[in-house]
Image (cartoon, rainbow, N blue to C red; front, side, top):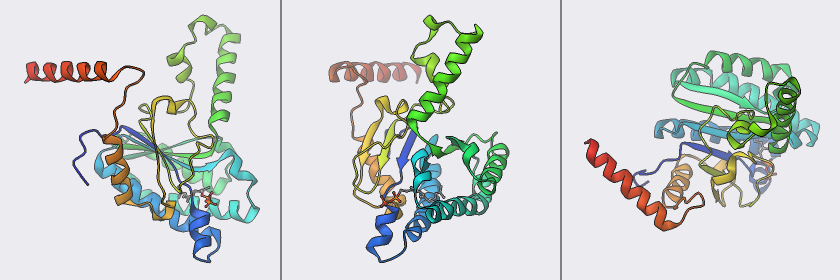
Length: 255
Ligand code: FPP
């Protein structure tokens, strides 16, 4: 990997292709999820070493509840095993584990260790690893709107004060840095209801690799792609170049 001159602060990943990875090998789909859990471990470790501030993984969508019951059960068991097996890794590496989504729907054998590890790691400052569980971007926005409406009804929020920043504070991602990079594996080019609000200015990278084959090296490759992108946030290239010069001048003065 080349040097990382521009590391994203926050990376989100749609971990797609577990089922196809398994089917291509004549294996049951759950074997793809099992191997995918190894990718979660590998990518998390690599992200932490690189110094990412936040990594958000789409592990189970609101819509995934409609999958065959035995696949849902197996995924819940994998999550439960993951929380048990990664406990020490998370604690020893100052990782703050968090979750977004309708986590109340998770069965107790997942929700209990999840809540416990969230609480135990809440003070960590190293990297925030957020698992999107029973998560949907539209559901998340709808939930935030309900909370906004409740505050307006209670008289603690004036409708005229609702702007992008104020609304964003009602989303569960409010404690995270802005999403800089969204990666989807498996070659599919869709967002599938993931972080719809948060990805407004994220760079998108779609990779032709199934999630179980996405490891440290593939993470480094997408970070290289990100570093080569020009992010304009609605400005022109010329404005971006002028800003970069100003920043360089400022740091010259300081040193
Ligand atoms: C999408 O692939 C993947 C999922 C719905 C589940 C992701 C779960 C894991 C990576 C393992 C468990 C997670 C953790 C955090 C330990 P798919 O099944 O839709 O693949 P397909 O499109 O090829 O069928």
